[in-house]
Image 1 (cartoon, rainbow, N blue to C red):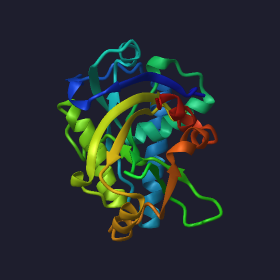
Image 2: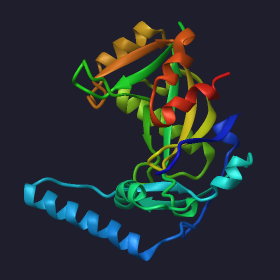
Image 3: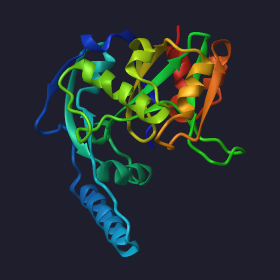
Image 4: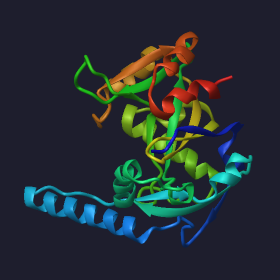
Length: 246
């Protein structure tokens, strides 16, 4: 199983990141595992057709030069990887000892969002109030949804998710910068942005209540003074985020 880790602990402005595109990914492919992944997806597609539902295979950006980024590099070399492979390899990684060059390294962005009255904003994705599923506002960096040509485009992905999930506009944001990059158990590369708002906790809640998308069921506000303790109790890569905060 993949171990979570901090790939980079450093404050970076998105505009300072250089983007290079690899037409062919450098991901090392084991033919047997790849065929298993493809077969699993074909079975899911068949099942969805039988149930009269649709299943969508999107395209993630993949970070091809993780080692260079660990060493402080600002040149992100990106290729792509299909969602179907990302999904299958999550399970395959638990059953097989993958080497790092086999990891999916699919990119996600997450916003550590802070109000003017010093509350951090998270989303709860569960309708069961007794079992909240708390996470960052954010999502996958997907070629189907956004073409990445510059570092600013990665930042745009965070802003897009903030709008979709909690109904805040870019005009509501005062400043934003990357504070670190993490590796999740799912082999995802998580780029964490600290996003400072122009709004108070109450103003964020009002805008959220007017949202069109209901993926986020409710907001969770954590006071700044409690944030490191909050992260220490989280699972997966989230438990590492407290180490990124000054």
